[in-house]
View 1 (cartoon, rainbow, N blue to C red):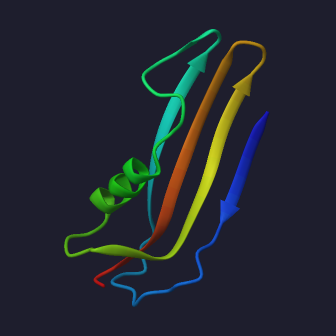
View 2 (tube, rainbow, N blue to C red):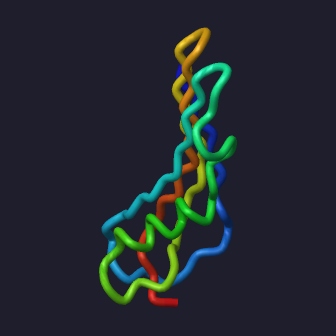
Length: 90
């Protein structure tokens, strides 16, 4: 099973470049164990996207936040939160 959920923020900022960047944070669960954390961290995903952006980027414009997951019954589950958008200097 593969599931994607998307939420689009309403506020837009001036764009620095038209090259879209994407960052993600994932956790893996192998029943009955999990490694490190149970939920992916939105701040880590955002920081990862900013690290991949060109120099001078301060935030993201026209951004999206969505969940991505992979489930292999009955034992294996990967859950990710993904942040993507256009680099902005504002």
